[in-house]
Image (tube, rainbow, N blue to C red; front, side, top):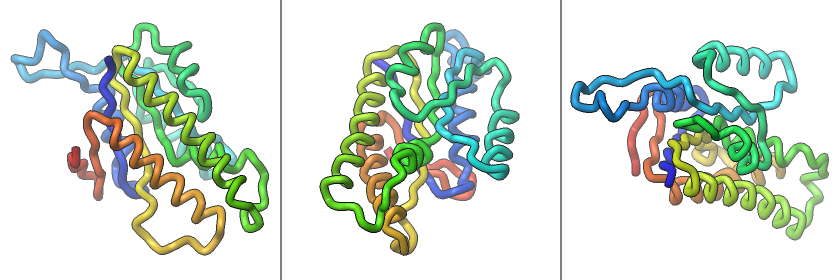
Length: 198
């Protein structure tokens, strides 16, 4: 059975840096008494970002430069259970960064008129996203690895002006709750400081 750590927080709060530190500095059984840790090279990094403009390209590049070169990186935002199944062999940790980008990608690939969308369509979208997350959570329970998931806590500000933004905020909030409930540990990052809340 795997262990799931969920990390949330605002933009630029240090979530990814903390997640990468957790993934790469896991204590090795034989060294626990010496209170030492070693850099693990057998990490699967699942990046959900899609480079849609120059700014996003730069952000992705900075993330890549910060990670150890030997970590295996897979770019995907759907069917994560299958992605993990195909790439998990020999891995001690899986780092998924990030859930809110995944949700965004699943929403925008539909090319819908969000202002005129009916309740049934909204339900179908959230159900599909919820199903993706459920399959991911089930996978974390069935694999012997450390799973670290990064997300953004976006519901702490003003109510968004546009319908799509409101739908996104609501879906992300509910998905974060499900991940936090399923997680063994939850951290909230504030100004670069991770605070354990579960």
